[in-house]
Amino acid sequence: MAAQGMPMSTSQRMASSPLYLAFYLFLVMLGNVGNTTVIAVVGESLLRETGAVRSSDVILVNMAFSNLMVSLTRNSLLVISDMGMEVFLNRNWCRFMMGIWVWLRSANVWSTFFLSAFHFQTLRRVAPPITNVHGHPGPPKSLVFGLCLIWSLNLMYSIPAFMFSKNGDENSTESLMLVSSTTRPLLGCIWSFPSVYSGLAFATSSMVIHEMIPIFLMSATNLGSLLTLYAHGQTRRAANKSQDAPVITRIPAERRAAKVILALNILFISSWGASVISVNYFNYSRGSSSSSTEFLLIVARIANITFIALSPIVLAVGHRRLRAFLKSILSRII
Image (cartoon, rainbow, N blue to C red; front, side, top):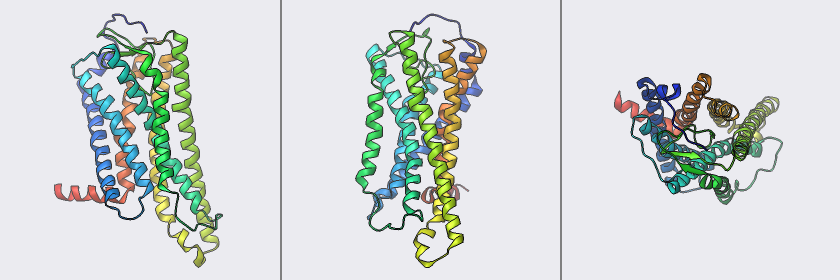
């Protein structure tokens, strides 16, 4: 994409304001510390378990890891850039970093969906209509395969980022943006597609694959989980028999898990949706530099970090080990 010298825009002035820097720095640090805590606490419990590994905890660690990687490789660098420390990479390093950003951000989306899908599948497995629930739960290999599939397929999707990007300078401006990678040039790296139409084609495919489909699937699986839990409650009230006890004893825990996942989905859809609207408005207005467009880009930057920053707090409310860890920390401080 073409790069040209331009005076400082409204969004650039706003991004350099002390209030914005402080708020953005707070969100980035909250995300880094929170997701590191989730990985450490839940990961330690996984290593200590001698029996079967809890699949839900493995998925939580994977989601927190993807959150942390996005925050460290992208959002932390944005904070450093906003503070005035500008670093410009050469063409090869720009291609590498753009590919990494697309890979991590896309894998992050599907890792979040994987948690919702796993909980829905778990509820369907223990639902009353399925009478034969003997034997072991799904083998760990299926879980590992699912996680490997997420990371490998998204690595394949990020291949164009390794090819169609280039290095710019301090006067470079982005004329195409993707929620999965960038809402402004970083380290001097910008998209460089052969034509505007090929760039928009890639942006449109990204919008469908990594924005619309995951949000739809998250909403569908979460609604399915809530309906399944409602069916559990109806069955429990209709026939409270002894043979139902193994299923019924799991309902309170599953309800709590459903509430946590619902909160995560709402948080994700809100932050992701705001970023999607903002970035795609920019793309399809052909890089218009109006004040409304620039304000929406600021909204996109905040929205991109909101889920990463707040999701560990939501998890701490619903996860027993995380809640116990935070209580112990607070008791020492207070």
